[in-house]
Amino acid sequence: MFVNNKEKGDKQVMASAKQTKEKPLEKLTAKELREIAFGIPEISGVHGMNKSELIQEIKKAKGIEDKKEKTKNASVRDLKAKINELKKKRDEAIEIKDLIKVSILRRRISKLKKKTRRAEL
Figure 1 (cartoon, rainbow, N blue to C red):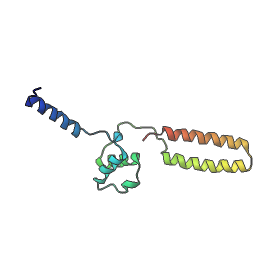
Figure 2 (figure 1 turned 45 degrees about the vertical axis):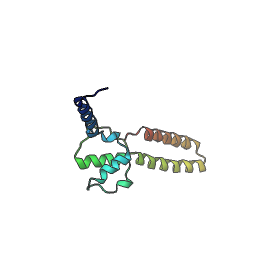
Figure 3 (figure 1 turned 60 degrees about the vertical axis):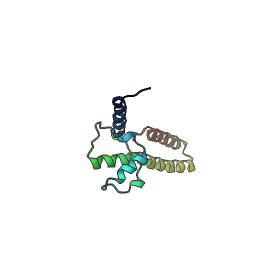
Figure 4 (figure 1 turned 90 degrees about the vertical axis):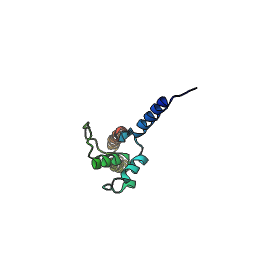
């Protein structure tokens, strides 16, 4: 089969366009985000950050603003800290055999766990 140079050149141009086209930060993996963050001198502590923190820091360093303002949800770390506090209170309630308080705390813990699962990046 004969392929002329024009068609071959078009394929190369399309391939290079795909390579230069950047993916949105949210679609990149944490490893890829860390590589980007290493190239930005303002960001420190890259290895200790999770994906959402990396995205925020990269956007702040590059001056990118989020288009959509999301409702303020507590971060996953904050929610897990609250869950741990409630678990301690639940254990205390179990020791004093306050079954009503135990069931209330159990429901609160369950709701917070659901929020952590739904929490966005």
